[in-house]
Length: 460
Image (cartoon, rainbow, N blue to C red):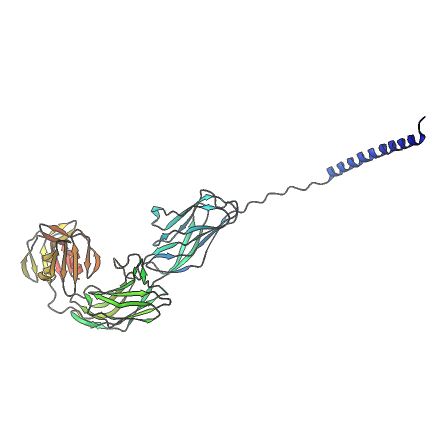
């Protein structure tokens, strides 16, 4: 016999199950329908990746003419988006004409992970351009600083800003100032003085050398003592050593501070300045030979202290100033007029016919004569002409002039200064043959040649 109480309880459970199952299915169906009817969000368009390069430079640095390794401002190239500097592309830094890279800037990545190669200077760029190749593009926007670069600034460079052109296949395009060029010194003259040709130990005006800025005059240049060299023109020599003093600033001079040799005054520096300095050259006495023409007597200033590129050899003038004015012609009766003919055996010196040591000849349009013959035409005595067989050098020495010419060289030394020649001297049958025009020019004499007749004249 079944238990009525238990049967009743089972029936109640069955009813609950029948009622709860449809409710569950209904709830799930309604949720599904609601989700299908809800509006879906519209798809968002993808934003374009920002790309490109931005270029800027630090403040331009002050540089002086005649510097071998003048520093320039750092330049930054910034990616506006990752990968703007693509692998295999280049960034170039180009200087204006006349300047050249002495040391290529170093690329330093200060942000991001792009990788650049070291700079290369193409042979056909005259040292003006340095190129960097992107070795690996970055995954993050990068910033690259090109720093610690140095340039060579010749003495003849114009004053003003140095504009660097940034370019290359990576897409950089900008022009930025990286330096300001100035002359290392300027000259002033105290008053005016009058001098005459053919006179000795004549006072000239004081010469003042003003330094453009601290250390503009270099006391130590490429490991050697810096020198200012003052050169007088042809036919003018220093009769005595002038007085040289620093009158402003803290530039230090050596002791002794100056040396004189012929037409060259050398001022020796010992220590550089921390403030612009002034050098005064006073008590200048000049001797002028009879060849000096009427007009201003100019002193040129150069030397290694202002020219680290050539180190003063050959001499290149950084500035010039007139310390005197020659207003008298050479004394009467001192001029010598001579003449000869190509292939001839005689010459006329002041109307006197004399034999020639060697027949003059023409080679590549240049007239060659024996050094002993041209010496007579210039009024140089035989005792002042010397031949050094060991060095194969001939010298013509007078109180006002020292000329040295070496066989085979296209350079002669005039009072210690190297001067280019149109042709090299030769040794023929024991005779030294020199280009007549070059030797005459060294002695400030006029040389003329008539190709149609072969006649030559020397007016000294």
